[in-house]
Length: 334
Image 1 (cartoon, helix red, strand yellow):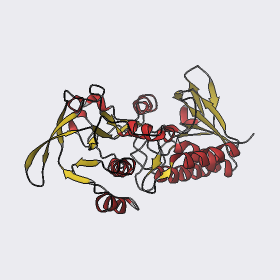
Image 2 (cartoon, one colour; image 1 turned 90 degrees about the vertical axis):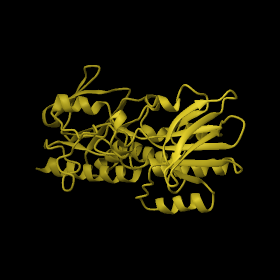
Image 3 (tube, one colour; image 1 turned 60 degrees about the horizontal axis):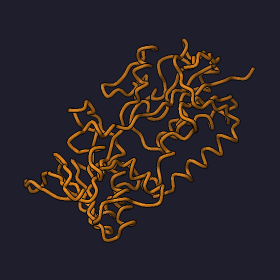
């Protein structure tokens, strides 16, 4: 009988893990709690920093998964991982045999409504970056009458008040990308971006940031928005401080976009309780070693890939999935 590996999560990392395992002669089984695989990439319109349509990346991965012959079980959740990854139990009681398990369960998005001072789901024209992506996917941006748009960085990241002290790493570049898209969609718009500091660590990120300023005239203001309120004409009044000049600022905009961060997946706590998994203070799963064992769990046949261990971009998640698949193959030879 051939080797079978169960992959928990059918997002980018899960799909790439299945693709690579198949090439190594191992049978992958993807278990996905949603109705279809693809994870959060299903919700995205274009990807930073190249503006590549998300559908192209997702379509390529799905085609490769189909060609791999991977078994896919959707609308299912894993309730328990057996000792050393030799089996998993699903939420419907089904027990599946496995030779190894790769956990690629991903992350959750920070719920912006927890930051009540910004009025998300209270005021009509306050949105999140996820909402904006959906608008672009559906063909257009909806704002109140007018052309003034503000972005707020680090909503649910680097914020001790909501116990989210970590940096989500991709929020800055997401905000820059969407600010440019706003100007492309509404050329006469005035777009403002409020930030603590800009973290442009990836290839092409700094260049896109410069392009936003030089070619699209995005106004970057170093300072936090302290509160937002709705005006009588359904616009959004924001109060902030420009920390570079040390002065308070009040502005009325037609649209406020909250750039929400990555939050550790809710299932991480379950893994910790049931399998003795160590977590970082952020709630992300701690691998065996950050340098030489970043996909290892410490258990010989349980591995990690993607954003279960830390915020990552799509490319990093795909690369880690390849590494995890090869570690699985090595472990099964031992």
